[in-house]
Every structure is written in C-alpha cells, then in structure tokens.
Length: 468
Image (cartoon, rainbow, N blue to C red):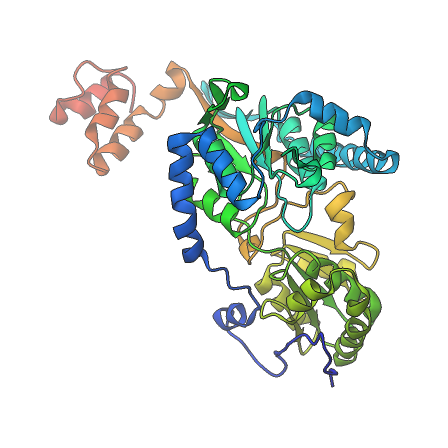
C-alpha cells in the first residue's frame, strides 16, 4: 500500500476499469483556474491601458508590483551594466543555453516549396516571419532569464524584425528595473527594447501600444505588436485570451505540470525529485506519476516524505503535491499507462520504463517528451536545446510548444498562366454555379468568352473557346 505522510499525493486508481475516452479525460487531475474571476479583474486593466497608456502602466506597476518605475522602457545602459556585473559562471551557462537552442532552431526553419499541378499551374508556399512580436517574461515567485532565451532565439531565427520584451520590475535596488540577470540575458541576445512592465498591463501595452506620459517615455512609449508570446500567471493568460484575435498569441498557458510514466524499473528517489522539481514552481503546479507498480508508488511517496521537508520551498511544494492537480495514477499495465499519459497530455512527460524507446512512439499527446532517467525536465528548462514554453492543461492534445514556426506564417502563392486557367475554367464555372455563386465562375469565363452572362449559351461558348 502507498504509505500516508505529510506530503501524501492522492491516488487515482484506474486498475480493473475500462474507461471510455470521456471518462479517462475526466479522471485526469487538473487545477481549477478561476478564469471568470480573473476576466472581471483584467478587463478594466486592458481598457485603462488602451485609454491612458504609460500613465496607466505606472499606476498598475505601483499597485501590483509596489514600485513606480521612472523608466518604463529600460535604458540600454542599464542592460549593458547588468551584463558587466553578471557572474562569469552564470554568463557561461546562459551562453551555452543560447548556443544549443539556436542550433536546434536553425533546423526548425520551414522550407518554401512549390507544386506544379499541370502546364502553367503552380502553387507555392512561402514562410514569412511575423513583423513585430511582444515577448512576455514572467516574474513572481522566481525570475526566468531562461524564458528570455526560449522566446527570443526562435523569434530571431525566424527572422522577426522587431522584438520587444516585457517583464515585471524588481524590488532590487529600488530603481524599478527588472531583474539584473534578465537584463543581462537581453544584452547577450542583442535585444534592446525591454519594458519594466508585468501582468495584464504588459499584455495591454503590447496589444494596443502605449503613448508616453512623461518626457523620458517619448511621444510613443511602445508600438503595438502583431503577436504576443510567453508564459505568465492567470492574469497574463486571461489578458492574452481577451486580446486574441486583435493580435496573435502563442497559447493561453495554465500552471506548469509534469507527468512521469514509469514502471518498476524506475528509481523512486529520482522520480520523487523530478515531481518535486515541478512542484517548486507554484502551489498550482501539477505533479503526476503514472505507473502500474504499487511498489514504485509507495517508494516514491516515502522519498517525498523524506525529501520535501529538506527543500527551501517546502510549503509551496507541499501544497502543490497534495493538491487536486497532482496525484499518483495506478494502472493495470503499460497499455493503460500509455492511455492515461495520452489523456493527461502533459506539458512535460518523462518516460522512465524498461524500454523507453518502445513507449515514445506510442505517445501522441505531450508538450515535450523526456526519454529515460537521464533526461529530467530541468534539462529542457535550461540547456537541452529544446524549448520550455509548452502547452499546459491538456492542450497538448491539439497544440504545440514554442518554436520557430510560432513566429512565421505560411502564405500560398498561386501562379496560373493562360494555359493553366483555361484547362479548368469550365469546371470552376460549374462548381461556382452549384454553390449559387455564378459571378465567381463568370469572372473566370470572362477571360475566354465574350458573354458569360448568357446562361443558355455558355456551354456553346465554352466549346468554341476550347474550354470543353
């Protein structure tokens, strides 16, 4: 039996059950988001920033982050100074992370192509970068220079010509500037448009733009963007959802999560620390173990009871591990474990089984798959070369993580000459008439016959013109 302790994860026992797809989805542990309450709070913030620009931004920073920034746009000199003060080991780690993800991103760039359908009939597809992007880097319980890298590098690789970063101001130094490591990372990446703005107000600034309110802002503080990317809390996620359609967004992200699909060959201590690592993010983070081994489940619980009290963020971690969004899913065997993993559709899915290579191809739904015991999630958080901005809350069933593709859009180019159009003109006309849109067909026929409006004589004209 799984032993009960101070950090006991709830048990979801699927053994002996034959669940429908709907029942399996319903059985998965999820956080309660409270989006309706967030919407009521976010809507007036969006409207106020749209109306008052920089003045509203300063007011909300003072209200929520308890500091009123003098410079909403971070001076370039401040970023250069932050870089000069950066610890050498941290700088080396950041630069290695950048090198690895840039190498992966260079392989992600989609290729243009064309298809020749007949003589004079070609359809091409061009991939075009989004022109201007707003990248959000969260603050809160931790700071994330890694998120700067994960947003900026694929955007740069895609060819985005205008990048802006928003991140909350830090209490350090009392100057209203963001965290120094974040600023240093921006300097390493060559990004010089950075704003000390967080929360829903940052999303509003990106979506609507913001005029200046003080001399240091200039007449226009920030131009509107075409797309907003990057993770954030419930208020950031709600704001992104509310401006979606006017600007593009990558996703509406929820709390972070991990699922570990493991069998009796997994090391319980390693599984436990991997669950703990994700629970460290915040109280709503989801940590899920999927296993057919009751012995492993008991071993993992024992390790949690020993290890959680030793960590720095013990209270936060305990709340996360014992919450409704976390749990141990017990299954009848590997097949049911795979089914559960696909239903849960984890942001991060670790596979720690005897034959991980046989399991990986069976996973259809995951933000990222971490194969084997030496591929823990923090590897992807910092330095694997993969991207850590991933779909959450089960959206990996239909969505993907951030990548070069996020910052590009495919545009088809249709290239038909007279021969190509003539070969199918009559069929286009017939199709259009069947949809009761005759003018669609008439605009094609006009290029080859004199009177496309003569319904009775169209076929004869088509035949005379060689369209039949």
